[in-house]
Length: 506
Image 1 (cartoon, one colour):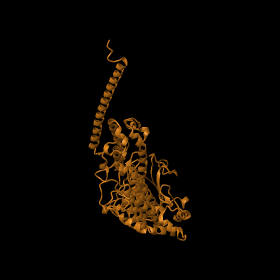
Image 2: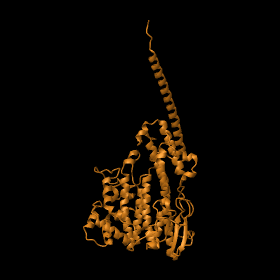
Image 3: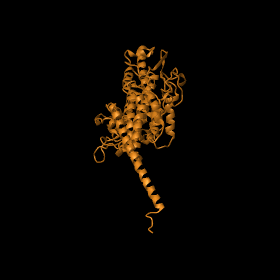
Image 4: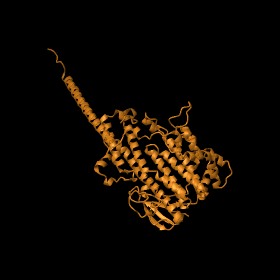
């Protein structure tokens, strides 16, 4: 008798293998179909965006290169830090020299610890000499060598007055500061972080941008100290030049379409606004300087910058996700099913549009802040995590928090512009106006609006020589010009620009 061709166990094994092959084939077919459908949906999403004038490529958001001879950062003292100086072989380096950045930052590091005599947010100021005395005590008592040669030279001198010590340190940096001030008159201020037309997205992440931003901040603090000294010494024209240079540094910081760069820019603007406010509280500025401040501030639109950066972050995120696989910096996405990548890209594009771009009005300029309680379902769905929506919930909360900072910075600029016009009015009329509309004749062609509500800024004349000017703040509610000492923006009630320091601080 012949044995059976196969045993019962073998038959079951063959059946299992066959069933597994069928399942794998069906799964592969499902994945292939879903990949095809997702790819078509992604291409349709791109076409829809392009029809609205939105280009999703990273290269499309990069600013056009400006001539070196017109670029503020190409001046010799800064050139090495920002990639404009010749390299060892005589050719220009594409990226900045981080060693040059560290050297420049070290030269100016002493100024970062100089206490401020006041700021517009608190509306309080104290005598500059008091701030200097506190600073002098600290820098002469420490043995740290972290603050460069200038501070070491100061400690080698016999102790003089706080003002003498600060003058000595400023004199050590005079040649460098003078060059930076002259270069600030150039028409452009642009950091370069890439070399078009080929852009490696990893270069943006791991390149020297953060070092360059830190380098830009270091001369800012020295210029701030110089501005205070010039104001205290009765030289408002030199103080005005320092503030203008601070604003040029902020232009350079915000020249690339990334939020980290814009956040550095708005912090610089805030420091410049503090120095402007200090001069206003003591009526130090003259009409010509106030007119220059107002004109310069009118050229800054942080909301428009934010719109540009949101497009940049969107393009950066798409590249990270693998919209352009050869440039994907998140390597794990290369092993995802393509349908998963395409769907995440689609959700990312639509979420950036719904959460940010649809809420930005650069013409206002205004920004409609998010309110999860009244958020429509088609928008709130992007907050839920799924295989097709992994990236958006990861990046959304952090970017959402920046919206309040942008509104606050734009309010700072608008309040400072109006404050300059109010002071010009006072210089001519020996009093502040009854209402902001009185500035329309010869001082402000258009009164800036509150970036939170889009309505006029709030103004109240308290006395002939004192007023309260404010934005309603993040909650959008008018608290009558009340503010608080809390540090967070959201807890400050109204954002108030006081016309002078409070009596308690005098």
